[in-house]
Length: 180
Image (tube, rainbow, N blue to C red; front, side, top):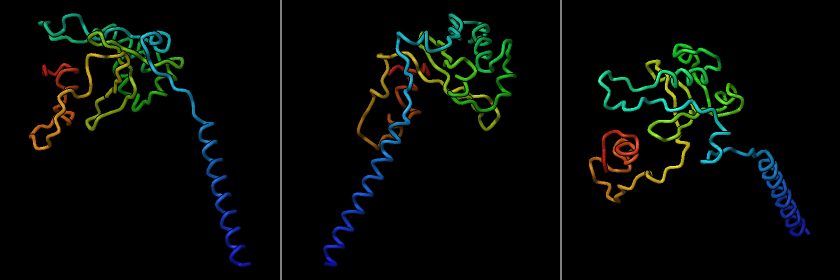
């Protein structure tokens, strides 16, 4: 009888454990929020576009200017959440997450354009020297660039292609001078 009692107790405990785990699974699935992903059709309705932040022909300019002042002013205003914001206002913000940025812009992300590609501001933080850093994520589709078409299985190279510093993304896609 003790063997039967132990068997029934073990089965009952296993059923209770499985039931509790299933409850936790259903609770976690119930709290999943829908996410918003940019496509070429919804980028204008789901974001605030500050325009192209680069000047036309910036690479050939004699004065060395790269950024469009009006677009940068619009970006500062959207990051700071107030009209007439300057870079000093953005510097004073500290760290902002994508959620914080959306909260300042009626629930919309900030999108900017560089060299014809759309980017969204996902994070604002400071580096070790106190400089403000905006992390950007490419919002527009790109079939031109993949992570690393230079892939090679060899691991003995001095500069392997699977490191960001020597990757195709850095060399070609981000215009650092490489040509593949």
